Length: 174
Image 1 (cartoon, rainbow, N blue to C red):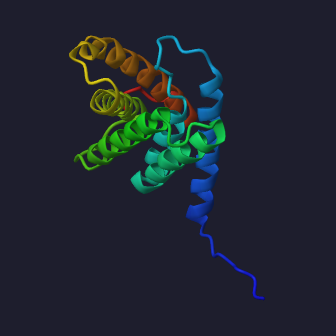
Image 2 (tube, rainbow, N blue to C red):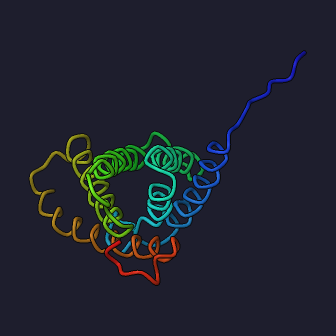
C-alpha cells in the first residue's frame, strides 16, 4: 500500500493558519450574548481584512469561506438556517471586498474594507432571511437598525485590524 502525500504550499499554510484564527474567533463569538437578536460583532472579520490587505483577495476569500464551513461544523450549525445566513453574508462580503479591491488608486484602509464587508454581510443575511425564512414586509423595519449595527461593528473590527497591521502610528485614512 502506498502512502498518500499532499504537496502543500506556503500559501496553503498561511490560509490554514489565518482560517484557524478566524474559526477560533467565530466559535468564541458564538458563545457571547448578542446585543440585538441575530447580531454579532463579527470579530472574525478582523482576520479576513488582515488577509485581504496583506495577502490579497484570494487568501481573504478562502479564510472567510473556511471560517463559515468549519466553524459551523464545530458549533453544530452546519446546513441549518444559521449556516445558510452566515454563508450568504460571507459570500456577499467577499464579493464586495473583491469589487472594492479592483477600484483604482490606493484603495480602502482596514476600516473602510471592514465597514464595506460588514454592510455587505448584513445585507446578504437580511435578504436571504427575507427570501427564504421570513418573507414579510415588516422585516424591512429592522433593516436600519441592522445596518447601523453593521457600520458600528465594522468600524470597531476595522480599527482593531488597523492596529494589528501596525497602522497605529499612521493616520486612519490609510
